[in-house]
Length: 179
Length: 318
Image 1 (cartoon, helix red, strand yellow):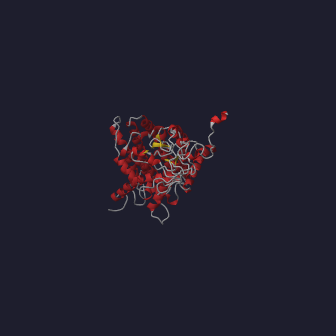
Image 2 (spheres, each protein chain N blue to C red):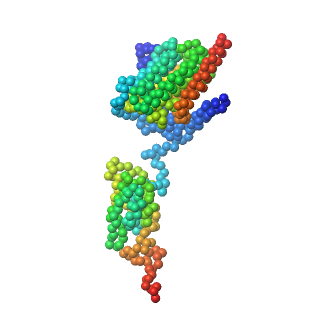
Image 3 (cartoon, rainbow over the protein chains, first blue to last red):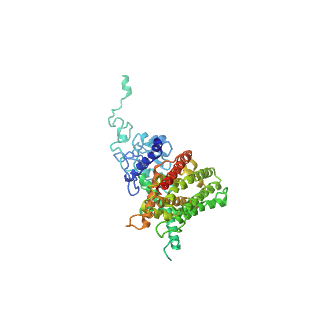
């Protein structure tokens, strides 16, 4: 009999008390438009294309982001300028497809494509969700301030020949090994 | 026009206020649930979200009032009207304060119980006429639950009737001026509380409309204002049970003289309403068979025992 009362009545009363005591706890709600939540720096939000410290586009149009993208929302076309630098002729992200997984950022060899803590991306029409390179490109370096791909890579472009990159030895003439 | 029991002014004010309070409970319930779940609840429309009710009303009135082609038209339309009419009629016998009330009936308690029984028709007709398996299951559960819990809802009140010697709710309140019946009739109070929740099928006894199990039960096929009437009917039932608990066990309008009697009634009734909302926030729904077993094998014998002991004590002391 005592156990019956304990199980049926007392446990319910204890539950009631516990729930009631939450009346004196501050609500967790963040009143969003007026009150902005803290966004962590590594939050995976709106995608941007960054520039290197010299102000040039970092993207070398290698297509790795487009390959890594699980929903195929990235489209780009490679082209070259007269200096031999590769860059995308167009770079298009369809944000109505994007799932903010960040695979493109992980795949990018030049830190060009980066995800930012901005999440307020709602639009009234679907077409407005398609962002072109002009929309994506920012004027800064994003999360990596000192990195410049062409400065460390072996690729020769105008103004920087083979062997002149950072920490790179001059190329060896393989025929000299035969003597 | 005079201010006395049964005057047209009295009737109009009570009718309007009761429906207004039942509608406002939509907001009260959401805010209180928010409070107990550490969130805020609706606070955007109007002051503290008070106009949320108006927004909900506009929405529900402008929605399509659809009657499914496979439903039985007449009883489908009749069902939500029954619950509103039945519960509003029950308010007729509630004594809100001296001079405030619709009728001063000698059979007040019996009238309320009879009307509560009629309320079962609303749910049953709604579920049956929908011609939907979930609605039918809901109606089935509702019928069984309401019929079972009505049995000892009545019996639990007999202790109060025996103590006060009257079926008249107004006289029951006056009889409590030297002590509320919560003390001598505590078991009766608990049983009536539980039966009342089951009768108005509020959580945790909302088995007839358990969303997780059977969609929305008997009002699955209802939309627009017909659904709104079931919805407001449920809140009206909540107010009714809270008022009855106040009148029968907590001395109705009686209280210290620094507040007018009607305020005491309102404070007590609102306390019960808040308690019902707390129950909704805290207690999970029992299984259907648990509810039936609990009712027939525990509450019914307990209420009979309570009646027996009360009768014996009255017999001995007189």
